[in-house]
Length: 266
Image (cartoon, rainbow, N blue to C red; front, side):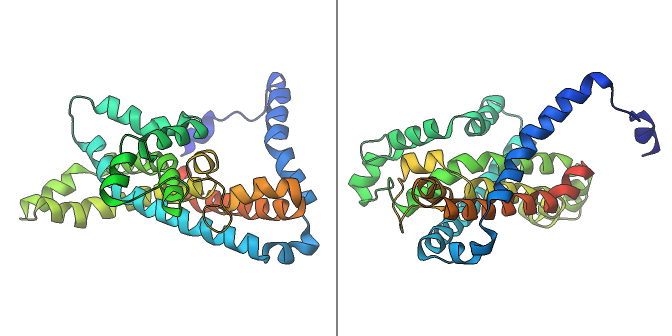
């Protein structure tokens, strides 16, 4: 620790003052403006309106469901990427990361082409099981899972890579099965990374907009989550939009504070 501190600069080079100040202003001023313009005196009334409460409920249902689905699908995938060397692993990892850099609207269009009534899988789901995903609550969950899953997989893969393989080998030597080793040794040791990945996944799902509105629509009471409600309220009721934005901002800040020790420790 002392060697790290010794390498730190004690001052800021004059040449870097302007870009650092510019970056701080770019990141900080919009947040300050949001907080300053928030209707603090009417915040409780704005957030307790039926429309906002319904959008908040749908956001929680969709984001928590997306997090659960991402965990179910993402943890085995992360273990595979971390522990198994197979042809195409780099391609699979790139595919996992693609939704992070893909424009969300493009992701929504891709979901429509895959799971729409005439999509590659959607037509079969409609014909065989009478299941229609677009413009439904399940469709909103699927859209949020699509964009949030990579955050969990990347964090979980890093966690699995940090697990000391010697501990797993010792458990196996004592007679534990591979499933028992995974459940009693690997998962507990990787738990902090998994928890951080799940938190990031939930936050990304909670704030998802583009893929959701494209694939699931913006139907009040059915698929209108909090970010979609903010978008609509900006035109008709700005104070409500500011209040809902504060909720999302508060969630983001709380998440950063909660995960700070995890990131700083790495």
